[in-house]
Length: 315
Image 1: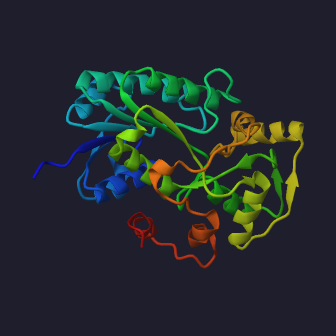
Image 2 (image 1 turned 120 degrees about the horizontal axis):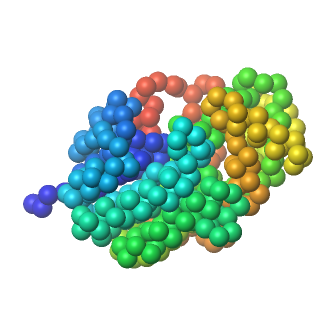
Image 3 (image 1 turned 90 degrees about the horizontal axis):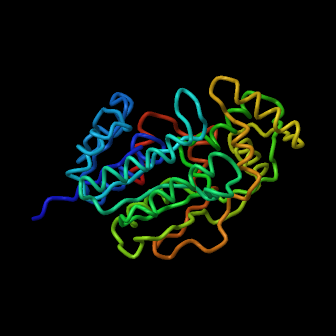
């Protein structure tokens, strides 16, 4: 019997990454995850056929060493906020360039790159979107067998989107909201993970870019109201005009935790939705938000250290 293929997953210890790694192990792959701090990846160390390696992702020698035994690379590295020495340019443009160079030096042809709806190097609504578009261009011009996936907002048990609004509803009696009419089409994290694994398995996806969205479009106000209601803390929502929205974003940008930034607000001036049906190549029906979110948002939801593993395994 041939040895299982090895997939190098960059950004594998993050929110989306942990689901991708779990799906890959379920599919019989061996997985290498590069992380800055191995202790923060304990949830991955428990999975079979996963090797968690501590190192600097921006070190070319480290990337090359881990790419050599791999048959494919999945790049999930991305940031929503700049700070602490991390910039959109470094994470979304310079890093994909390092990944492409490592793949070429190691002889790895297959690369799956996670981007975002709205990515556009020239006309993106924000620095985030423009940097994502530049990263896509680096990958598309690499000469590698690439696939680019561009999800809308991704939701799941560990997300920083629905959970953030639910937490704010528990703390405050009123929720002031900038960009309240911004439109999103959220997609479930497990669906994104399945699309990544399918892309690796199906050569039809080589050289293609796919937008990934859930089954329903919501305004930001509708999503915030839903998160608050399901968490048992319905709250009045006060839409903010452009000037007050910018002031709110600036204030949140300066606070610890950086819940929002002016660049995030700029991103929301463009609809974050798909203009076509879900790509049939992935052979799945996107999961409805309402079908799963109560499992972690509702007050009666069971919360334990094993919840994440139950979700990964589909139980």
